[in-house]
Image (cartoon, rainbow, N blue to C red; front, side, top):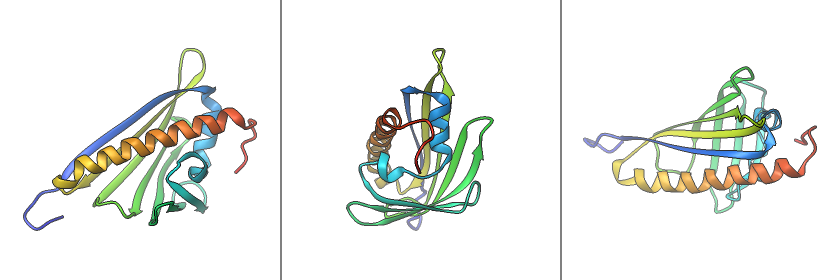
Length: 154
């Protein structure tokens, strides 16, 4: 936070209906990893721990490291939430939530929402970067899930 300037709260949401069953999408998301396969901007992704409290460590292709802590993993509601505890992005808080819903034809509807706070001068750029990055990641997830068997590889 810049002295005397309040932070701006922002929220972006990406929603995509996928050509895979909702159970398959949730199974992949609940394993917490594979972001290096799904997101073109992520070079490596490793997970330490299981479930709530697990940490996900990522390295960006352009340089920079990201660390997420899993704060919710609910199989009943098919919701995963994480707190971004370090990243090269100009944000002071960042919480992501990924939810899987089932469409009338049993296909997955993935909704990825990010709430973040940043300096007002940075918020539009951060929002656009996140919108593009998460959109590409959700598209990459679908391509990956369409091509792999139901016993998902980690």
